Length: 540
Image 1 (cartoon, helix red, strand yellow):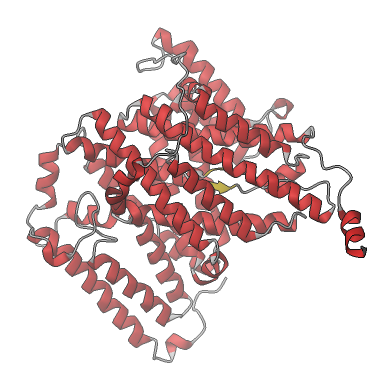
Image 2 (cartoon, helix red, strand yellow; image 1 turned 90 degrees about the horizontal axis):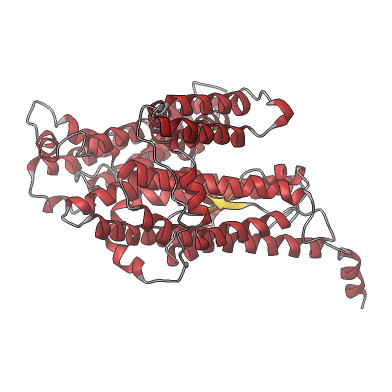
């Protein structure tokens, strides 16, 4: 009886389903998700010529359904926490589509896979379907990895140096998320540069607009209005494309189509899995941030929800993973409770099914969205240097290079830029050293995993943990030998190196693997010297 009385005393008299602050939270969270969906469609349709109908009717419904599922669970978790603690001011954890991984997977998995399927002889529609299956399978793999890591995320965060994790992400920010959108900005400069300027003024310089109007909204509004006003008159330097009034309907029904993509998806796992790992570590950080703000959610529950939401999205046709968003205290400061996640779940989930999300995406020109990507890139790069110890700055920067190689490899492998016959000849161009194009392709394959391991190795070396550094080099040697990283194949496939017939390609696993192994032995031997056991030479 006493226990029941205590529980009743803790129970809130009324935890509201909706408060006024939920409206502000909804606009922020929903717009973030719409922006990510716009990036996904813009990269695939505009950048790779992917059929828009498959993006809108196959990919969008399942992807949006993952957000619907995750935000509904987070809404329920907030109400459960309010009942348990008697706190009527609990704010739900925000969940949405992960921006870096959605952009990264579109650029280096889905887009290149679509081009590879077309190059193999498939017509664009069949190539697009095979790419969709591959994308679903990739989400299944990532969801399973996140499911396992949700039980050991804290251990991973303690073991892996931040320079490797954040440095690899910052490299993506520099070369893919940052540089590529600059081309879109200056391809339609009247729209893009003005929108970029508004983003830089409001989000980077933090100069408020009159009336404290939100910078992202104003930038997109101004860019979109200019595009549709000036475009029909030919004032933008390109071909104007008016938005289609059609609503692309689609139901996120569970499908076994991902089974057809399991085998080809294995090629891209070295790229995809680190993205899942980063959201696990990010989920730990944002849960701690919410706890400090007064809402003590269980870390494992937060991570399990994002993992299951990713699996649900993949099973229903989605190709972008979900993650808890940074900024739960900011939503709390807006006065939001659990209503904003509930409304966002319904708006995004139903929008993916009923097609109004795809209409909004088509309405906004790429040049108006690209500046947001530039800001995201700047934020990611700066965060990597600020969050890591100062002495690890070189390790963070060292992790940039594999992504630069990947960007070059993408451009070299694009038939419209370099004809396929010429590209194949460059891969095998004889000389005193290994062919430069082959080296560039190899350095770019598995670039995220390579960057994470390079950054971790150098961070441990700087800290005089030479045996750990040697361990990372040993892992690099093994991965390079079997093509998990540094694959000699242009499509990034893994292999048994002794089964490679081409002598030029076969040199990569043996040369790279042996090089890493010899360096590991050297570092291990140096670990026995007195100088290696002294304090780090570079202090914060």
